[in-house]
Amino acid sequence: MASPTRLTGLDLVDCARANAKQGIETAANLCGYGTDLEGFRSELKQACDHMRIEFHELSDLIKDQPVAVSLDGVIVEPDTPGEL
Image 1 (cartoon, rainbow, N blue to C red):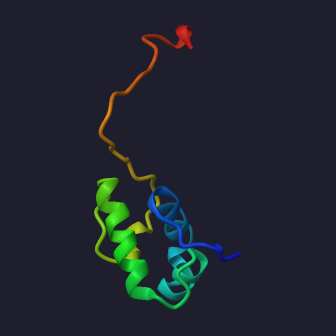
Image 2 (cartoon, rainbow, N blue to C red):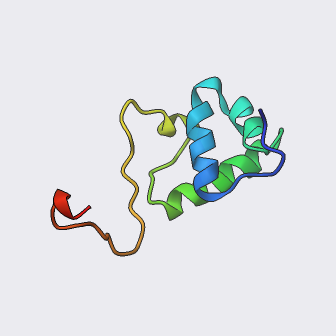
């Protein structure tokens, strides 16, 4: 089901990644960009840059393993599993 609004940020990257194997036209449409492929590419590139994901084309998002995302901030986690 296509998004009724243009997705941005993490939502856009997730949607594009989930639909990348179907091609750019389908991914753009399902992410709310319809036939605006240039707008889709531009917004996706910006979102990937912000998340520090290397992006040159849609096929860059097709991977067999998860992509590590690095965002500025502090990681908060317990010292031991018992402190969960």
